[in-house]
Length: 117
Image (cartoon, rainbow, N blue to C red; front, top):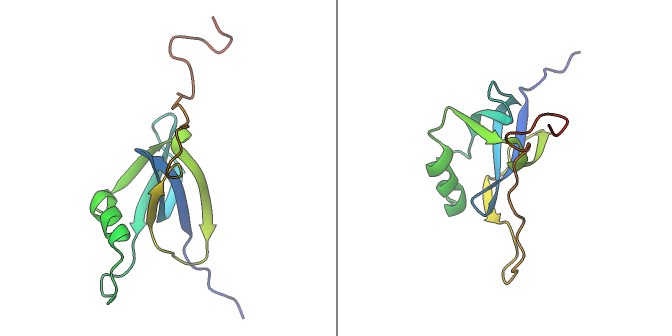
């Protein structure tokens, strides 16, 4: 008796314009562009549901038409391989009333070699 292995499903959590976004995808990997993670075959909830989540619909409108996302490596917070799909969501990166925000930094310093030359 062998169990049939389901295709992989990944939950990708990343920062996008002051928001933390959680999306589900079938394929995630290192892309051909240096410093980017490729996310393909996005999975959203079924449109036939009676209750529609406006947050998920907003993410579907923003990312649903993309064949492949190239996310900067420093924007990716976590990638998890999960058993089943959850709800795609977006939330503010910092709590309401917070005045401290992380400063975006590149992975490498342009114009410098590996030893600082």
